[in-house]
Amino acid sequence: MTILIKDIIQKLDLEAPFRLAEEWDNIGLLVGSPEQNVKSILIGLDPTTLLLNEAIAKNADTILTHHPVIFKPLSTINTSLPEGKLLQQALSHNISIIACHTNLDSAAAGVSDILAERLGIKALQPLIPAHDDDPQTGLGRIGQLETPVEPRQFLDKVMAVLELPTLQVAGPLPDKVQTVAVCGGSGSDFAAAALARDADVYITAEIKHNIARWAEENNFCIIDGTHYATEKPAVALLADKLNGICADNGWQIRIMESETENHPFHYIQQTDLRSS
Image 1 (spheres, rainbow, N blue to C red):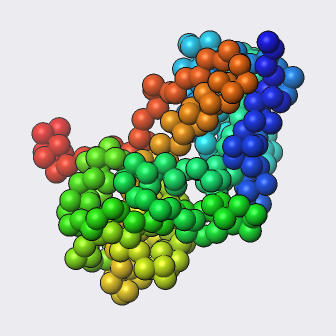
Image 2: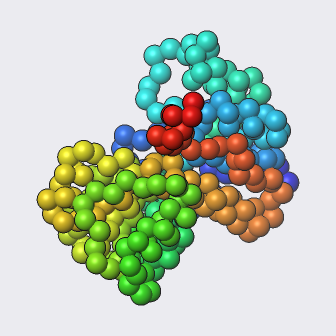
C-alpha cells in the first residue's frame, strides 16, 4: 500500500484539526510535496539541523515537529545560514517537514492534556475554551489531583516529570495543592484565567516579569517549567497518534521519536564556575 504525505495530513487533521490553529500560526506541510511517498517519520519538538541530520541518518523521508520550520515569511533563503541550510538539505534529501503547532495545543487530547496526565491531574477541562463544537478543545487545561498534596511533594513531582533539576516559582506556595492549571509552552498570558478558575498553582513556561510580579501581588503560585520541558511530551503524543493511525488503516510506516533532541538550556552552578 502506497501512503502519501497528503494521506498523513488528512489523518492529522482529524487528530488535531487545523481549524483550531491560531491565525498567526503556520502549520501543515511546510516543506515537500503532498504526493511524496511516506515510509518512515521522525518526530521532534523543534525543526533543527540536528533533527534533520538524525532523519538523514535514520533514512526518514518525513519529519513531524510541533514547532514550524517556517514561522514568519521568508524574504531570502541564504544557504550559508543554518535556517537556509536546513531547507536546502531537506529538499535535496527529499525529506518533507510537517508541523502540528497550535492546532495540537488546542486539540482534545493535545499538548496540555499529556502534560497534565503525567502530573496526575484528572477531570481535565480547557483553561481557555476554543470557539468550537467540541467542549474539550482550547488552550491549557485545568483539573484536580486525586488528593491534596504538600507543595514540596508536588514540586518534586513536577521536576521529575519535566526532568528538570530546578524550577522558577513566582508567588507564594499554597498550603496544599489539588486544583492545578497547566499550559504547555508559552502561557504567561493565561495566568489570570488560572487564578479566576481557583487553581492552586499554574504550570507553564516563559513567565513574563510583570506576570511574576502580578503573581506575588495576588498571592498566586506560578511555576515556570520551561518551554522545552512542558512541550516535550508532545513528541510521544504525536508518536502515539501516528501509531494509532497506522494500526487503524493497516499502514506499514516506521514511526520514530528523536533520540538526539535535548533541552536548549543547561544549568551552571556557582561551584561549576569555581572549578572551571
